Image (cartoon, rainbow, N blue to C red; front, side, top):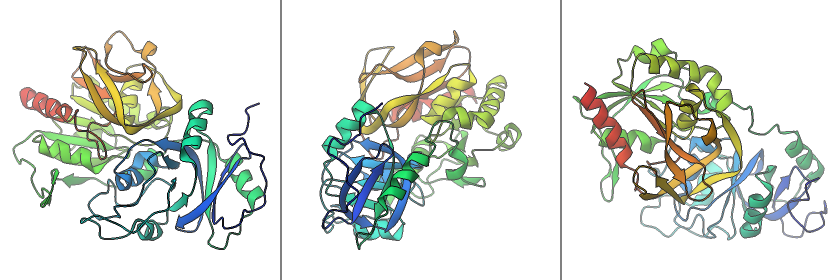
Length: 395
C-alpha cells in the first residue's frame, strides 16, 4: 500500500486560519490560505517548474482537469493582463503556491491575479510547502485531489477525500473534445513584441495553407505558424478527413491538448492515417505528437510524474545539439514501440523519454515539447519555419 503523500498524521479538524485545503485520494490533507474563487474542484495534482508565465500556464488547454503546484514561490506578483493568455478561458482547475499573492508590480498589469482568478472561477491555495509537495509527487506520482476554498473555513473533509477517491483519473479520458473549438475559423495574427502587442492581420495571403486540428491548441502555436509565413485555418478535434480536406490544406498541423491520447485517438487516429495516405505533410506537437505515433502503430503510456516546466533539455539525435524547451505532458510515446518507418529525432535529457519523431516514408514529424513556448525559451521556433518551408517546397 502506498504511504500517504504527506507524512504528518491526518486530522479532519480545520486548523485555525485555514481557508483552503488540498484533499488527496490517499486521505492526506494539505491546509493553507485560499484565494481566487471559492468552491471545490477535483483533478490530477501536478507541478510546474516555470518561473514566469503563470497566466499562459493557467489558460493552456493541455492543463484541463489538472491542479498545478508551482515550484517558483512568487506567483501572481506581476498581476494579469488580457494579452498573456493561450485560450479564451483558463483550463487548469486551480493552483497551489508558497507565498501569498501580492499587489501587482508590472507596467503591463491591468488586473490583480487574485481578481483574475475570481473572475474566471479558478481556485488558489497559498501557504503550502510546494517543495515538499513536489518531492512527494516525484517519488509517488501525480495523485488525484480536490482543491477547495471557503473564506469562512468550513470544509466537509470526508466528502472532499471521497470526491478525490471517486475521480477516475486521466487514463482513458478524452478531454480534447471538451476544450476544442466547436467550429472552423481563420487565424491571421502574428507574434507579440514589446510596445506593439500582437501583429494583427499579418498572415501572408500567398503563403502555404495550414489546417490546424484543434485538440486543445495554444494560441502562440498559431502565431508562430503565421510568423513563419503560413495562412491558417483551425478545425475542431472531431473534424473528419473530408472536412479537413475541404479546406484545401497544403499541410496539416496536429495540436497539443489534454487527456489520454489513446482515448482521443479513437476518432483522431483514423483521420491522421488518411492524411498520411494522401501524402499531406504533417507537424504535431505534444498530444499531436502522441497521436501521430499511435497512427503509425506505436503505443503511448502514462508517465509517473510527467514533464511540466520551461527548462527541459532535449537532445537532437542528428547532431547532438541541445535545446532548452517548454514541456507539459503526462503521457508519452513509447520509444521501443516505434515502427521501422519512424525514427527518434529528439530525446529528453532528464529521463531519456522520446521527445520527437519523424517518418522516413512520409513528410511528417512531431515533437513532445512545446516549441511555441509561452512560457519558456524560444530555442525551437525553427520547427515552425521548417514546416512552412517544406510546404513551400512541395507547392
